[in-house]
Image (cartoon, rainbow over all chains, first blue to last red; front, side, top):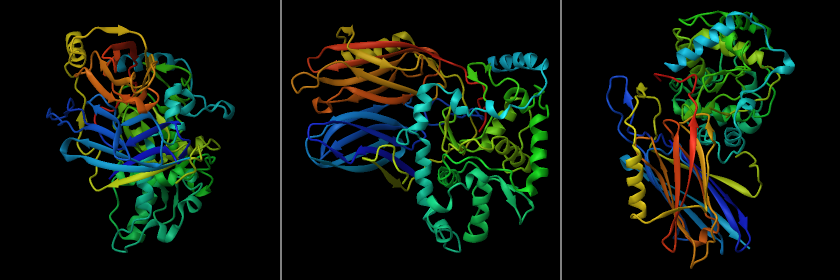
Length: 106
Length: 257
Length: 159
């Protein structure tokens, strides 16, 4: 049961710099832990996060095992038109999640 | 092993003073012991990872389940109204079993009796999510647990467990959380042990967790045998701790180191 | 769901079928092999291609005393314009002692408006954290912070 928490302003002025915050539920198993039996716990992390606005990439992150569980990102973008933000998280074991949010620019 | 050394040092300090309850005016939430960054993480709903569970919980609240094919909302309606202040009264007395039950057990009792669904194990993501969603509706409400007179003997038993020295380190909860809450254990602040924010997101766990999980960790920390999840003793401890925190504000889902 | 702190902001929920099941297996943390300063230098070389890295422009905000190494808030900001002809194109975070020296790469563009990113990282021990920014002119700038990770008093050995 994955869930994403996306924070984008509903409205902004043309040319305004806005902050976007995202949280995605994920264990981010580092691959460096062992079970009590000594068996290694295989790596299971999100490896890539991308934010696109109206189809064009505006922010991308490569994630490594040192990113904490339930990855959080905050970043900025200049908005010039109304449209749709699309968020995509891709990871190990076929992990793939998307979310979207719209903004109205005056 | 540095941890054991630190706790042994604390034990020596403790030996000299007797257990004394914290005056009402001096009670402090674990929140007030945290560094600014951790406080910010809790305060901002859009940065608080505990909110991921709350969001899951809202979905589950509205999802039909069990043989009865009923959702929580089919009986309780809008949780924002019906669940407001409810978590601030748990653990509560359960007439059917004649004992106190905590919020997780109440949710499971609803699943069993009304939804005819299987109960969820403690720390199961869905159970944590539902508990977090219900508890979130009490954010800011004063804790009222323990007002029911039927609970009195269980509160007393919980207090007894809280005071009792146990484990290889021969410590009671009170030796740290009443007598030494203004000190530190290794790098961590010793708090007063008020469970104002459960279920909460512990940075150590990198997950949301229940008060029972926290109590079991504490008991393991003093090198005693932890009670099983759902054991009456754990519920009695939860009950005493919540009644000891009466009047303090609910913070769920809180963030703690 | 709940009234957000700022009424112009909204929250969205995305749901998915696959569940990340937590705590199903008893897990203990063993001390992993540490990265070495050489590995850190090599990871940085992979990004810079051996170009000189100047100190400055980059600000790395990490609490100097970390409450729990499992979740350490971190913000990197670069004092530089974000114009199409002259901007910050990427930000890279490294550490000295985790098993892997790479922490994250962030790819930005002039439309970002402000070269600032925040995330939460893991630090196994007290160590140096390094942030490097690549500018559109191909130059590299960096900042580093020594972080003290305090020992958590009550860790769970077995879930």
